[in-house]
Length: 83
Ligand SMILES: [Zn+2]
Image (cartoon, rainbow, N blue to C red; front, side):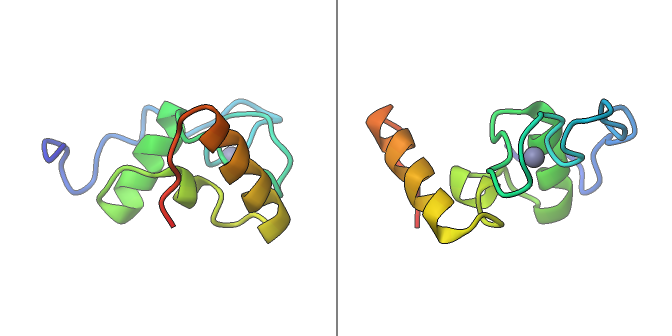
């Protein structure tokens, strides 16, 4: 995935719809994970970190109870969450 330049074209995705999370453009409570599959989130994250986000990144701001619940729910759907 090394084809993106250091600063990719976030101007296109710079604004997010009102009432949605500014990071992932999805409606969710602030203590819930970002939508890892949202392109807005993926490109914003890539701009900041130079790599694509994992679910661990998407829920890094969540309280541990929420993280545990999401990790469990993702596992049940066959998604491994790296520590
Ligand atoms: Zn979000």
